[in-house]
Image 1 (cartoon, rainbow, N blue to C red):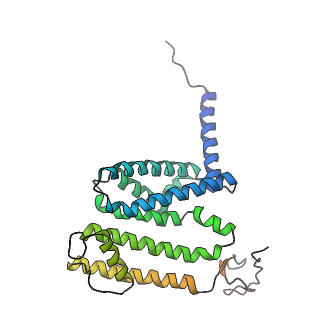
Image 2 (spheres, rainbow, N blue to C red):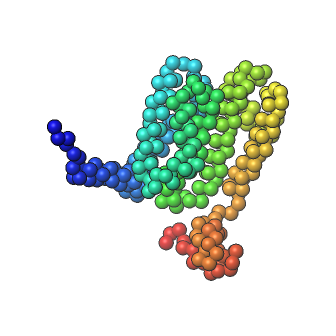
Image 3 (cartoon, rainbow, N blue to C red):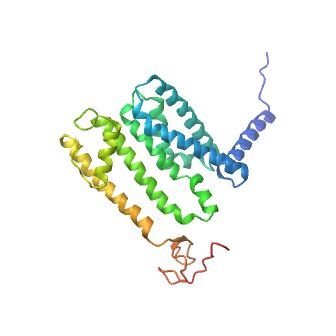
Length: 269
């Protein structure tokens, strides 16, 4: 019996369908149309709901419903990663980006929640990966609120750090004196980061002291970064044609690095 061969037309049809799917995903993830914006807002809403689950998961991780929600969210993240890979211009470059690697790690912790339970607190890094995408900042830029982007990024970095540390403290020191609940871990983290240091909640042992030291150093650095982002004069992105310096004062006439004359357009232009 003669074997049937796959015709070139069938191969082209499959390739054409894949190309059409990739083009559609690019329009949805990176487009500026009304349909693309609705899709991007939906993605942001779903991501925020997932982040809320990650933050609250230590409170009901021992309940049976946790695994159902966990695997459902894992399926959503897997679909999102697959869609982003198809929407990228080069999947091999995309997969090597730090944001993608963090998302893949988060997905792995969700597919093996029992084996990687002690690393579950790192799922909160999804806040950071979301802040690195253009889905959040594009609407602000379209409405002329780009000056809020730098302070917002600083707030997101600080919030991410707070919840990552809280999860680590709760996972590693739960049951120790003073750390009886997730709120206790959050209270310790905020008190340490702000250097308030009430002293009613402390971490025992050498590991606890080293954790406190790291939290204080990194936390105060993030607070300084946040204060700078809020109170320093707003900058605009306009690349100097001579030295390529990007950040300038809104009313700058010359580049402060090389003295090249600038023609920064007004926001209303």
